[in-house]
Image (cartoon, rainbow, N blue to C red; front, side, top):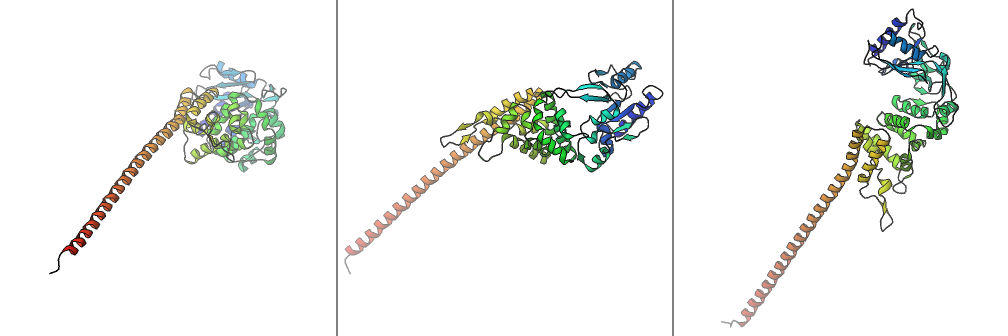
Length: 400
């Protein structure tokens, strides 16, 4: 989305709401305001409505007045809606109510949601950099934490409330915290980082779908070592699924890094080389996963992993399917990993053929050398016989 499109949408909402019950109750919120201050490209527009059930009601008001392309998608439990305006049909806009949240079930990150004030909505958000509101009517930016604008400019990630409470309520914020840190090159506030480390076990309640979404954003994003690498270092990625747990525990050789650490390093190396292709990055991450099943111990007691790429390709395809990755992409990853096995086997075959030819050539050279040596010995022997014959003949010749 172009920045001027973002401002045109806000101006359009200002004009639509003027003189209506929505007038003065619409706010651009979160990421779009943050990116506007940063001067970064704006990808999404979120509109908050500080009226009871404002998100759904405003969306339906727009629909009934024929301002929308089609019926909005409603999420009544959370008081939100997704819609497309006729004037901006290419842009999906999310409209939300200002709300308060209460987390009562420690085994779930889904809160009880009720309509709340704009201040309650502000302090229930994840980080101060995402707590800014732009009043669509006046253009004023509201910074109710008193830290949002400054933290954006200083590049600091901190929570608006106690970080332990923030991460305990919704552990996905741990993943988002590390991803923001990597994406923007920001630093995490000391108290926030301490709480993040001590709350990492809460990641066990995060759903498979949410894990998959955050994992892909990290893997395909920038500064992989600062996102996935940091997540591995604090022991968080192992909570994603059983495969990640096994990779974190598997160390191919004593003193080596774990398969999970090796996976992150492989992707980071691709990033350094400028490779952004999703299949290549996934193949780099799961390239050694076959070692979990292919390990055998030879006679000397050393572990070997014959053709682990072939097994790894199959394992990666199953894992990606479980993560909801597109089937064609998963097949590409499988082919890349198994292709390394085929390439290695082909290379080994070529090396054996080359060694065999070198051995044959060596034998031929040795045979030729022996033949030359025998011929030289034979010539030397004949020469000795000739000298002996000449001396003998000379003795037998009578003197004149």
